[in-house]
Amino acid sequence: MATANLILPQPGEDNYELEVNRVREKIKSTFLELIDCLKERESKLLRDLDTIVDCYRSYKSELTKLNEKKIAIEKLKYFHQNEILTSPIKCVHEDLITRLDTEIESIEFPEQPRMVSFTCENNKLLDEVKKFGKLVRSGIDYTNKKQPLMSVCTIGSGNEQLNYLWGVTVDNKTGNIYIADTWNNCIKVFDSTAKYLFKFRDSTGEGAMKHPNCLSIYGNRVLISQPHCILNYNLDGKFISKVGKQGNGELQFYHPRGLTIDDSNEDIYICDRNNNRVQILTKDLCYKTEFGTNTLKHPLNVKHSKEYIYVLDESNPCIHLFNRNLILQKSVISRGNGNQVLNPFSFFIDNSDFILIADFSSNAISIFNPEFKLVHKIPVSSNPVAVTVDNQNRVIVVCHNDKNCLQIF
Image: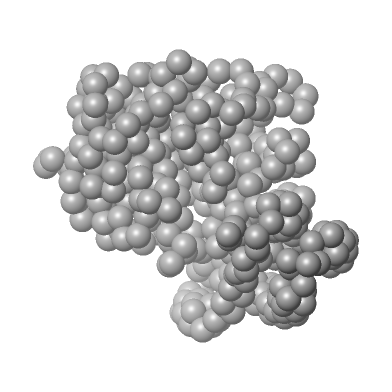
């Protein structure tokens, strides 16, 4: 008995209904071939597909309206924040900002429709349904992201300044943005409107930060890589634990970089850059295994999908796909001029397996579809080093030493 899930699409899929109709006909033809053993399941699955379409139409419409409303309020708030600096009637703008904050907080986004599960006894049908799920799953229209909604943070050491930063991640429960402020030796936290909230570091203890570079959130904790070790903090900035020292053995690192946490089993994947490998730790930060020593050349970042573990490194091609048994399957996306990437520093994989690469030298976020074809480039102000996507489908980028270090599209 095989089991599969139909993954619901996300907002922004312009051809959604066309693809549903086309694939529905394909599924129906497959059912006809299997009518003897699957007759009862046919009607149920088609009813479920109709339910998906109806729920998604309603969800997409409401979400689009609420996102437009929130963006409009955020732009108005940003205008009044700038006006405070020069206006003789500052109190008027401060009162408006308070009211706008209240209005933003009062917006309640609808919950995304749930997955629909089903079972079948035939691998051929299962393969067709998997293809269906892959076709309709995508969502974000990156081609509309040409100008940033917000560009904030100047260079410096103040609370609202950043200096030679490296990593960025988002807490999707709160929308807060966590940034590795590398040369200021701390993690800075901003809310979803890019307003500074707080920073944290343990300047003298075991959790002391010295040039933190990449970070990843899971649950109520944030893991941070820095030279030769991994730091474990909670999301409020309280130090929990530390693991690692310089070396090439188990739980030893030589300039670790990107890291990620596997939702399915809570394993932690860490790019051990100068040891040319990826180490895998358990959720308790104990050594589990490693891979890539015969393939990787200075791995920079690691992400995962349901099917693959993606590793970005300094080789050419620069992205390697390993299966869940840690066996290399293929290497994709070449470095070079034209429709390539020049100097990739980091990357992100969205829920539809689109790959967003922070291309340092081309001053752009290069976006590749699941077939690894370049589909769009988002121009940024200068030298992007990290990119992520939040649960509002906004692309969040951090750049090296630039007057607009944090940009949100």
